Length: 306
Ligand code: NAP
Image (cartoon, rainbow, N blue to C red):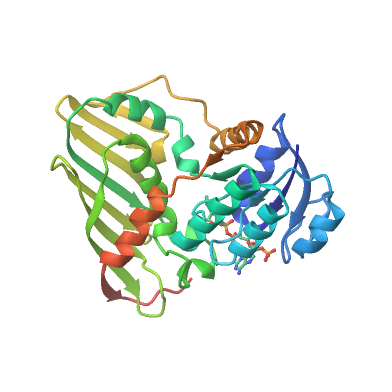
């Protein structure tokens, strides 16, 4: 199938294009970006022109920041194309709802991807937690924004999510491994005095059986980076580290995970969704993010400069 990638930036270059180029399912037929291009691939800066000149397209993969994404996703769905979305699937929940309704009306596949759920040990963690009584779960997601988002000013703009751009990955794992319905009960957002979005955040969740569930997100971490989830249950403690790539139970490393390859798995899944004309559009990580902004106490912190 022929696919176009929209928004040729860091994640498109680091992950999407290599995954497409090594996939048996996909051919990269076009790109659409204001400036970014891929050698040897027809490049467009305008959606109408791309749709006119690429009549055989099956799908588009949107790698733009969430802010400017909606009109591109809408145009693709209206043109009858299947659509794959980088996380988060939209800038707002109402955008997400309207995209899902449009995809249903057009009978095309729509995939809100959560790449962290494809990390090697996430499905093993879900299987291990099943049937156990959770006592406590703590997320610690601390990374260096200068290293992972160099110069990306959109992350600091309204709708850019700030530290939740990374934290939503942890929330996608959380909602992927727990079946219980959680609710954000409190949040604190630390916003640099010269920016619109938080650089750090603390969240507490209400768990239906009273387990203590918290998350700490911080973009000011230099040195070792931390992407950990620690779950204490009535039958031991599971620790997911390195963003879900490794798992230990009571200190013992666990095997049986999937191979590395989050993005190849996402593209294989997109091909299956198209074959089934299905929609996979879980917005639960985005709901927790939105709720943190709704509930969040805002504290002003030191100015951030690249
Ligand atoms: P990025 O490097 O800034 O790339 C996004 C590209 O979108 C830009 O290079 C830009 O290309 C295009 N674009 C179009 N309209 C834009 C606008 N108004 N503002 C900024 N760029 C615009 O960002 P990214 O890191 O690839 O992230 C893109 C999406 O992938 C985000 O939703 C992010 O959460 C997600 N993601 C990122 C990572 C990561 O590690 N970076 C990991 C997983 C997911 P042109 O200038 O050519 O138009």
